[in-house]
Image (cartoon, rainbow, N blue to C red; front, side):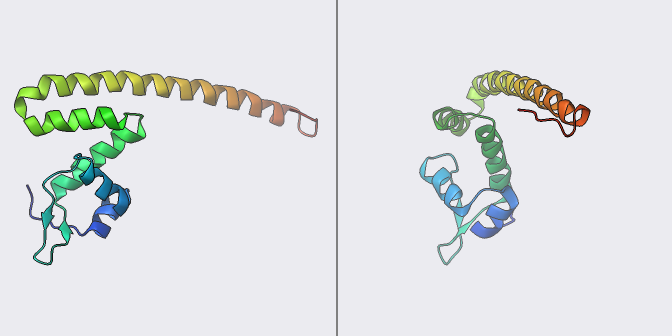
Length: 126
């Protein structure tokens, strides 16, 4: 673990999640062993920041909280769960690829519809 100590506000800025989300991740056991300053305030490491970025990525791409908890539980166990964690990420990658294809299809449809506006400017279109 690195020695950089980020305050909750700095961590939120660094990772793009809110302070409430950081606390939620801690309550849910997704972010563990957060250091405390002598004042008792949370201090996050650079490793914590990288982990939160991974969690955010997985959530933003549709991984459920239950799936995240399972993944984090496996990570806490350690190296013996590497293969299972890799499989979880590979399965999730397939889902993300499908999402990307769905978005590409939607974008093509939007572009097609927009072409009507450029081809028929001034005409009433639905």
